[in-house]
Length: 287
Image (cartoon, rainbow, N blue to C red; front, side):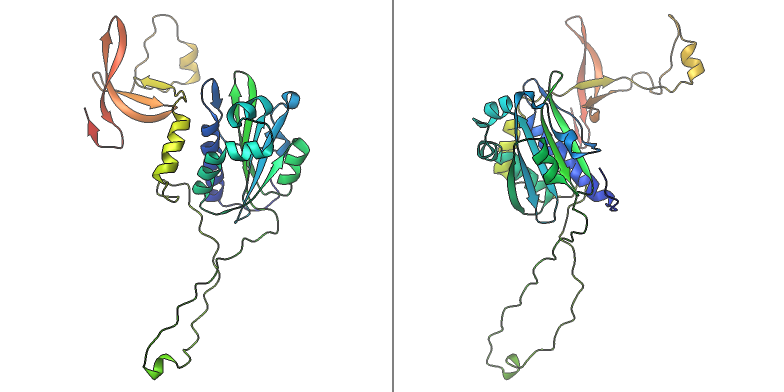
């Protein structure tokens, strides 16, 4: 959803990271989190209301908004109840993690009992990104993040007052020349790069990892790739040979949810193909 406001790409990237960070914490067991995607309207963030829903709308100091909506059965499973207070208490780790990722203080949270309240909370927002949490084919929860409202300018940080200098020197009590006034700057926001964002405390990290312990990740071994024209693809038949760009004997890539994680060699174990990791990508570690 757009209101014509020009939103910087780093802010959109941060909103997407926020959505995916929160959605991953709601996944687990048979529940899978979808990727962050732009939403045409706020109502798209509401899961199926036939089972009842409950949610929270979170407001932050830079006028970013985040919404979390659960079906009633999932709220009772995760939070021990289906009231906004239950959800606020039961999802405190998620709220803390989102606040840490955004890098700005949480200023308010309100209960969202239905789709109209969700839409009202997000009315006038510049851009909305959201992700669904699926249990089979059913959407059992949604998490969304939205940019500032039209016409809202985040407040500049409070100026820091220099402490008085105590000294017997008479010059210390004389009025100092007024310093040049710098233009007010917007609150610091981390970008979507790997170095962005404040450090996560060990306590928060441990709680987050505990929530993610049962999340299933797809691991794919990729032998190689090739590019074919449509005419070449249509000409394929049993017995056709497709050459790959990788030389014989080269290691295969191990992808975790589509991202390169390691390289490995192909082996056979108990009559089945397997891989032995030879390099963890990015860590400089070799087996």
